[in-house]
Image (cartoon, rainbow, N blue to C red):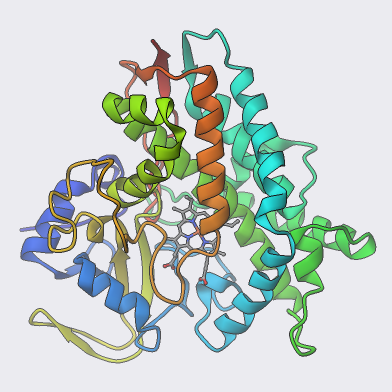
Length: 387
Ligand code: HEM
């Protein structure tokens, strides 16, 4: 009998054969392992993302949700509360415009890439993307960087789950608590000494006199740090993996960086790091002959929808020329990623600078270990050989 267990190491390593069976044979599937429905076809996932009244995020959007987060962040509220939060945060994002961040991002990328000059092998995550993402997020949000290694470790740990118990283990919860304490200290400091940074802006942001409450400020800051560091870092690793595995594409974008945005979009479609998110049903829904009941959880498998042949012909092929409009690598609907612009800009600049120093690389024989997470998918380390 067919089973789909989003917590299993086999799904961490390669979900795509199972996604194909889900889409073709079980488009509305109840996973006994996860105790939730799984939608995998592009049209169904997108429709659910748009229909927030039926597919609610208010009970959390991570497949394994963190305690106390539901109801207090962008990803874990429904409109109108969600729209109010998003409006306040977008407002804060706008004040610090992206143009102003381009130069700092480039300096951070050039510095991280420069330290790899002359190497014959390097570990992409520990020696490049982790350093880059933490520094970029610190610049964008205005975080102190006294201990950047710990900050990165905690951001990554809090999104993971125990692969055996499938729950958050003590180490994941401790990392989440650490991040909240870290965020609380930054917020308190910015309130005393406001600066021109995101946290200063949104902890004071107002629309028509409407401000965020304390729990919203704290958990939204915590989530932004997590989303920024983990999602960006995870995607960069997946992008590097795609380029290493497709030397023709890597050569093209290294020689002509104006092609990088096409390669980035295709990677977001082909194997985004943000694979699966969760919703809660507000009413019964019948789909493909099955009836999902109000109160049950539903997994929106963005990673499966992005490989749906009904939407993307030859979906299993990584194609630089594709220009995959409407992919769900950043989600879709009211909860589509808020960080798309900074993410696209950061990845583009990072690889422009990396390719100036190391244009030729490929995978070594080292096996990849995958992050234990039911929501995100990225390698724990990525060893690359420089040609
Ligand atoms: C390439 C890197 C990234 C990927 C692949 C990604 C992916 C996603 C996805 C799939 C969602 C939708 C979640 C859902 O449906 O429940 C999302 C939401 C979100 N992302 Fe990202 N993200 C990335 C980078 C970032 C960055 C850098 C930030 C912030 C600095 C960020 C902030 C957010 C926020 C705040 C939300 C919630 C939006 C809402 O619910 O209205 N993301 N992201």
